[in-house]
Length: 68
Image (cartoon, rainbow, N blue to C red; front, top):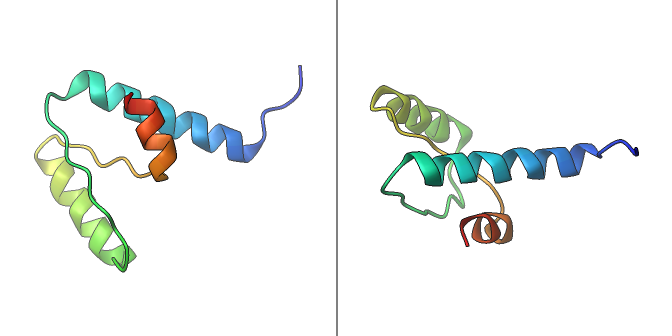
């Protein structure tokens, strides 16, 4: 069996995270994170962890395919 590439492994991980989040949570929000610094994202992730929420990031087409 051929080894799955790193790129495909990342896509599979995001796909699984989206599927898990859709099954676990009843509400979700989609946002565009252009021009957002990594520090701001770090702060948001920390705040979301405190309220038992989850931030999943991925490319538009991959996220759209995973939720449909």
